[in-house]
Structures are given as structure tokens and as C-alpha cells.
Length: 222
Image (cartoon, rainbow, N blue to C red):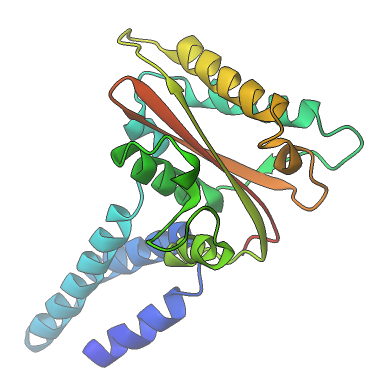
């Protein structure tokens, strides 16, 4: 059974994490309803538990944006932020959202929010990276089974304190403020207007009275 699980895991690792979760859920559902002889029950339950544990571990790696910010209209925020980017694209191919990048962006936003990073070190993954280490950033993608050759990362933060039942406009306002600031000062302008990338996703994390935003720009995401 362990050998079979090893083979399945090796095949699954080539897939985006969202696909893996879907496939493991299919396996769990199928095994939960299969009819077997009584003497095979122990083996089936063992395999089923292996799949359930793997599914649990995979789901722990991701957090949906709706769970992070439950009082915000996520669709409206996504639409407006994408429009800001494409406003400056001109004749270039417009950016489109790629769901696979959701988890890479959100995971990093959550980490720098937990560590309350507010400096140039927001790109640094590990000790010794200093400011920007392409291979280290690429590791963050591969950790979530996202393969991407061309990419860039933008991080920003700003003051945010909304306790209302609907904080959509407040979230849009702070995201726009951060976008304008980093675009006008030139920090993130190259990624926004780059002809190299055509896919995007961003993650938002809140810690205390601040919000952290990670945006991943990419091309040829697999």
C-alpha cells in the first residue's frame, strides 16, 4: 500500500495543487463507496486513510481568500484591481487571472503579514537572500507544485482597519493607494507594463491594522 501511495504521489506532484486536491477527493469518494469483501476491508481502510491524510495535508497548504477576508466582495475587488493593471497595458496583451497563482501569492502575503515585514526584505525567503533571489522565489512556486519559467513578484502594505460588515470599498481604497504608490514611484511599474507576462494573481493578508498584498506576474504557468 505504501508503495502504491508513493507512485501516486510522484505522479500527482506534477500537477498544480488545486488539481491534486480535486483528484484526491475523487479517489476518497470512490473508495468510500466501493463494495468489497470483508477480508479486503482492512486494506481498503488503510489506503483510504492514506488518501484522506494526504488530502488534509494539501488543504492545509492553501487558504482561500474568502476565509482570509470574509467581509469583502472578492469578485469586485479582483475586477477593479485587474482593470488598474490593464489600464496601463496599452497595446500589450491584457493581464488575465490564473487560479494556480492564487495560492502562491496568498501564501506569501500571509507569511510576510505574520512576520510583519514592511521593508525591502519582503522578497527574501531565507537567510542570506538579502533582497531578491530568483531561485528562492521560484522555490515558493515549486513548493505548491506550480511550474513557471517567467515571473515577477510585487509586495506592498498599507494601513487598513475596517470592522464593518462590508469592507469592500475600504479594501479597494487601500489596494488602489498601494498600487498607485508603487506604480508612480517606479517600484512595480516594470511588472505592470511588461510584455513578458500576461497572467496575474494577488493575495491579501491582514494582520492588526495593516494589510499586505503580494502580486505574482507570470507567463506559461503549468
